[in-house]
Image (cartoon, rainbow, N blue to C red):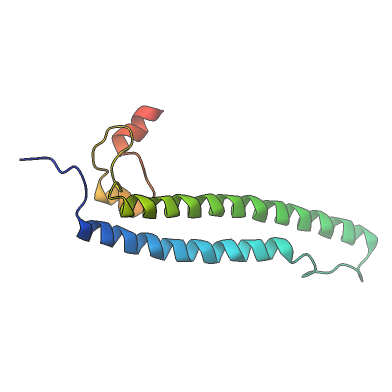
Length: 125
């Protein structure tokens, strides 16, 4: 039996649909995180005591920093998904960049932007 070297167009369409759904959700989440960072006046502390105001501002800064880190991760995830769409168009999607073999469908369903098979990922460590 000949080993498959790439996924069929039908299989690629299935993965494309999955990626497009994840991409839509990721972009929505990214916008929510950006809005959380930009809305600094949601919990105004102008009418509270000075001590509470300092604590509240510290919590606000920490929250914005956390949202900023999450937004960066989300942006990177979006870029990985967009790259996966390009690989689908090039018909190179699902091919391990280390071994040249097909990445299992189960792995691609769980991590649709994966570029390494499980074996290659384990050998990387």
